[in-house]
Image (cartoon, rainbow, N blue to C red; front, side, top):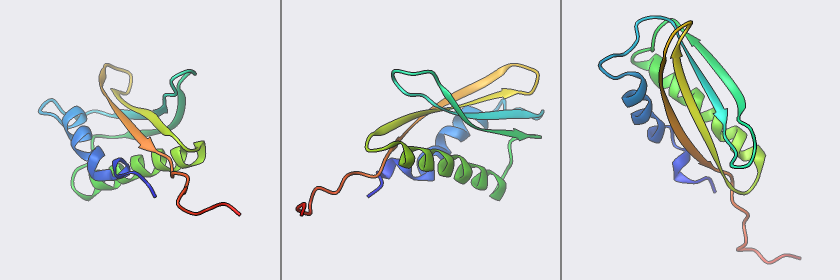
Length: 115
């Protein structure tokens, strides 16, 4: 059973706070989602190139895409919690911020006896 931390509602406040603050960029920006294992180099999962941070339904769809990408990756990696970082920066410019995320992989069901 997936951990509750895999819910997009947990990502949205962070994305709003870090990337949609009062200084929200109005220029093109790039979001990059990385898997950050404790003992290895970061691995780029996906990049989103945006004209500006979307609003309304577009924002919710973006959050759902980020959540789906990290959830799917965590599920493929096995039975542990995986760490991710979502970084934002202006295209050809400054860093805006980072958001760290944790996703739990599906847990091994130990309630059933093995045959």
